[in-house]
Image (tube, rainbow, N blue to C red):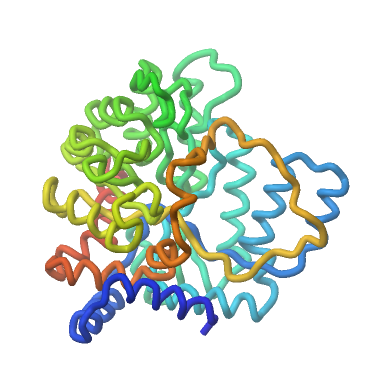
Length: 400
């Protein structure tokens, strides 16, 4: 076992402090259930990567460097047999069967999205014996039976052409990405785009007329609309007009957190009425309160008790680096891109301790289940929260 994993597990146990019976039952339930992270990141590898240092010295742009860096961490680093074995052990430790894997660049640039998608598509080709890429829910049980982990693709934006001549022409890229295996798309990524306002826009103007056409095309094709990074009104509008489930894959309950990524009760009710779910994330500053695993469970319980257990999931929005990457020089510094607009200074990250973050770490997925047992949820309810609700939505979305 990788030494850091035990430290992470102990951080979670220190928060929960479960009795032996609850711990055993939770771990057994986790192992026997289908565990589907509504929005997660597969473990990444590391090691020496001098070719990345050469890119820096050659003056590579941020995106050229980032693409090469991600390809190394996601797939090339696992050419090392020891690193590949560590990857397998990490998945076993987490007990996760499938990630809704972020595999598309933030924003709407179709070329950038394709370049990133290609990196993740390669994982299942290069890492046989570890991953299988899934595009339909009926494939998932067989992948689990074969002892492999499934990657179900999502993108951090809706692909749009540089120049829009007509709405039908602009919408064609949604179908193209569907055929390439993408099954969920962010409507916005924090900032405003042609579809609607992101959650970091103070105006919160809502969904555009073009955005309605985008959602109806996603409904028609079979792609899940995801409003995790959308504004309150954009999310509400989208949930109201979507003919199939709309989801908020990784967020928090606004009744328990003032963070701009959290969703209000009114919005969650609209998501519920669409047939979708809110995935609670594993970022302590978003959760606020105790900023640890108990805070994460508070948000899950609040949504489940108030809006129904069928409408909450877990979308961690975090992963785990198995080893550092050595590029042979300092990493380049770049300005943040507009779409990212990460939480600004003073919003909580500087208050977070390592132990708090460790407690909600992706590697502690089994303890999420233990915590739900502690909170009094039945086995059937827990199976819905840790994977069943995601499976239901992906199935309903693909139904014609």
